[in-house]
Image (cartoon, rainbow, N blue to C red; front, side, top):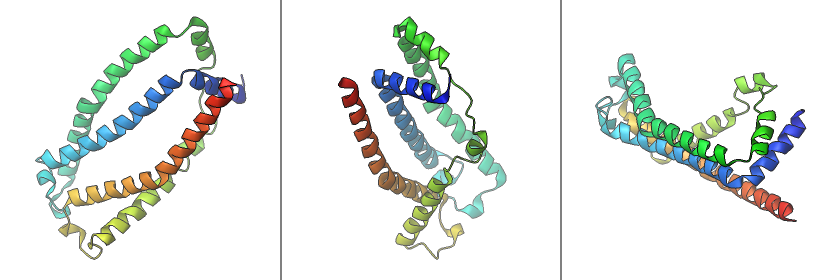
Length: 195
């Protein structure tokens, strides 16, 4: 099978099972938001980092590694394990309800390795988001009046909250138009399928 035929198959499959695709997208958004909330909770309640009050001059490599390992553990316990458990159950329930011919078609058009691995290895153009978040981060620090303040005088929780604020503004400014485009595209696709 060629890539165009596979793409057409997956488009028609996604249209036919739009509830499952919507559930998958909603779950991904929920996981992202939940991960941010766990990060904010961990910053406020962790002894490592002084409950978010330490400045950078109090950190060492040992405390950074300890902080990151504990954060990964809590993210896995609070977000990862429940999502994996629920996801496996939901997927198998959905798979059992899928007709046999659709299961065979899906296996026949199964996942293929992308041909352009080099582009994926270099981020596939995702550096633009990082640059935009950094610019937004700088703007937020400037607007807070901390532009000339030494980083050692700012708590690490302030810098993380500022970075998250910059990320939020980038997602709002870029995400709303993107969501509208996707919504209208899906609406057109559903209308065309109904004809």
